[in-house]
Length: 506
Image (cartoon, rainbow, N blue to C red):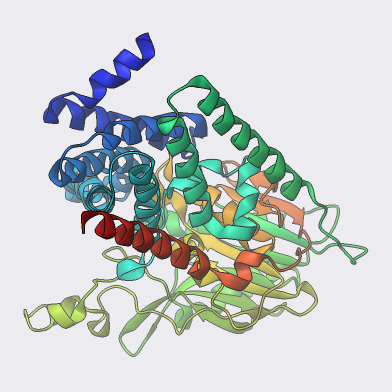
């Protein structure tokens, strides 16, 4: 009875107090994301948000309720977004709070529209909750694609590292989001403990089934797995391009590359932008790298310029230091690596800020599988590209493994690097492919086809890691289908509820 009276009071709060509670609950929901990783806090917080929404009286109140919850959620989960502005505090530090504010407010709009839509097309009760589950899942799907997409801190990411994560092999990250919200709606809508017990029973069944999916062995026909050396120099971002320190970081990578080991590695990987010279000027550096590697091929990140256009690239050096295949990053970071909407900038007289005029990076042609001979076919991913499941699936040929090089020094040391690593683990689950992840400041890791970290170098460490490349698993259902089936399901549910509501009103 006491519990019921407290919940009933929440639904009768004034607008300001109600929005404050929603914002706080949204922040608590964010505790499910790495590095805190408490998904049960997320479930309870969403259940509370749904409870308040269920009795919202107007579309306007529902919209503001959704915006408040979203702003609280993104303010916490995207708090790392201030870190790039703190690299040079004197010049850019003043922008940090605005970057976080605009991110929380902007992404909160997606939730606001979902809450408003759910209120408009449904009648009160379970139908309204179901509509909100579908609309909010759809909003998360839309923000993953709209304007090049930003699928960071998706609601379903709260299960990364736990048994339910393995359902991503079937339904992808947005299926995990739908599952999470359905459980929260069940907790919110159940009036009695018996109903909540049924919801908890369903959750237990999902946990057991997810554990079974993750425990299935990955068949491996190879007698000996290739060994890959991950080189992590730990170059602080504010010193990375310093004329005095850059050669020292390069020398550190040479030492780590040349370090002896019981078994000679089959491949050595350096992180993103690990060579402090442009590609066209780097042949002397390549020869030094080849000498340190003693004939072992090396994959490294480097920048290059071609006809006034700059590219963030990855290349492979053979044992003699000769450059082989070249890959240019194609999914760039808006405002970080390029200025979006050049068609708008040019008429306004800002053509100098477009990629064609040498401002920022230009995009490469798209995903490309690299043939690494005895090591199989690898799909290269540079930094940000690893957060997009649609990009990982876009290659014409299915690779044997995923290779991510990144510079997570931009993300600070609190949450950003750990959230980036978590998403890499989910890409492995979704595709059934192992991933080798090499980060400048960490966390560098080898991830198997079930999303388990088999070896890693911690954040802020300088060193190397020799680890066997795990085998690839069978092709997954999600790799075959992508997000289209789930998108069609969400659209059908919302359309059916809307038509039902229209018939009743008629």
